[in-house]
Length: 183
Image (cartoon, rainbow, N blue to C red; front, top):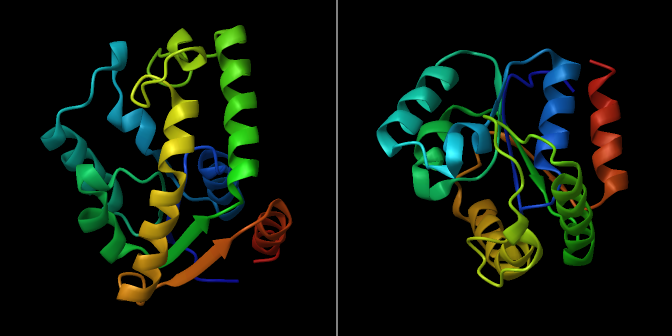
């Protein structure tokens, strides 16, 4: 599997985007941009849109990179997608996504693990029903929307210029990553 140079990893929250993006970047020796880290500065303040887009454009101006995340509302589709030559859509079942996001959130809250830019998982992720304050609720309520959006994208031609890997299970994802080791 050669030619993996400009990679976009997308999927529902909890689908494994960051883990897979890091492995792809390591295995193919590509620089990685984690959009969560770009979008959220200290205090969970959103990076101003113009700064977010400027930094994203600068990063993806290069010929080799991996971008991890969705952030359609911040213009990533228009900036990144036309330059990408590989899309990895992580699309495991909802039950798997929810298992992962609950386990990950509990671990992060309990251990106070730093996520990025000094930020830690907020305790509201354990009790708030507001999807904007609870990643577990966000994942549950947005799962179907995200899947539908990427199914539409596969049909509308947005990814026709690139190789698309829709990975629906841990086994498929592992096989894909193992194939990168053979480049």
